[in-house]
Length: 380
Ligand SMILES: *Cc1c(COP(=O)(O)O)cnc(C)c1O
Image 1 (cartoon, rainbow, N blue to C red):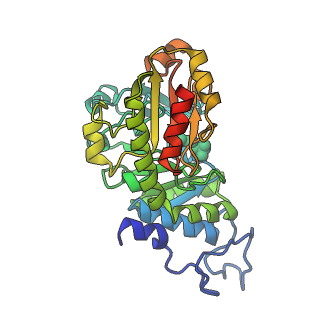
Image 2: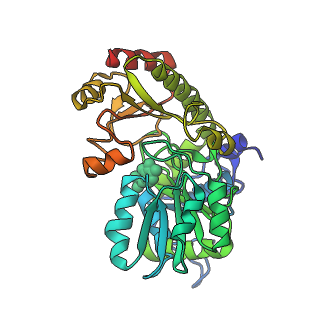
Image 3: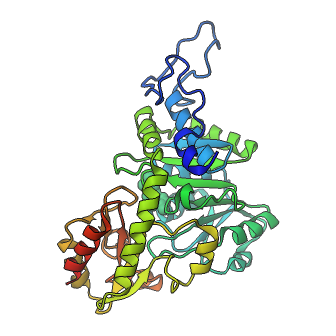
């Protein structure tokens, strides 16, 4: 089955044996009647399994070319489950340009449980080997990164991870399986904040994982059930519904992302534009190799690099909404220095490129002419 068919039918073969409904019903139930102790139809209690969640889990497994999917109450709950594979003394090597919530979870929660983290640049995958030792159990990659849109070569990292027998997990939230499929490139676990592009309509918070290996899937399922941070049936339905148009939305996100990146590149007030589809992007070649297209996330800075200038720009926008989050049908703008990265000291955030004038755009699926008009008036 091709990807665009999988978004609609992947893993959805026997969804409603009762009435053949085309969409899986929302099984809003906590428990299931048993004919005799243990006599059930595959579901006993909705933390352990729910048919609506199961339909979504099969869909995500199919899209990511995994064999197993797992859905959690948020993206961070999904990451939390992966980290619970580890024990005190274990070490993790992670990309340094990382979603803020992931960084917080690693450093403020899991460091307290005796897990050690190394946050490093992975522009050159070989750099990872400098930090590997016998305790290294997990390599954590996010690509494209947030908000600087750096691209990490997943295949090169996977080679190192295999050589040293560590797990490789990839946060695929920004790219989605439409653009890149990390399991195919050698990753062991792929993770999403389904809150973003998979849901796609800014109406749900959820996280998902997909894996190929049965033993690993069993361990993660054990954690999902034992810790209990599951996705509910209503939210599972919403994400399934979102996924059915993922390929259509992503195609338009990419087209509009390109139009916006090109418009900004030619604007006299704009300094740098960070979009991996631009030939001037430092990781353009890897992006071209590992991604099908370049997505709808675009960051940029202005030449005068003024904080009031950046604030005034986001306040003037009319079609773009000033908001946290990304990946919905509507275009959003964010100011990392005062929003997502405000808790990082100025000097630290500037080291990774988050200067005062940096704006991050989640380019939606509106008409590109309206988006460009809006950016033009706000920059003027
Ligand atoms: C939003 C996000 C997360 C966290 O997901 P939640 O659903 O908000 O818990 C993790 N990684 C990336 C890249 C994200 O954008």
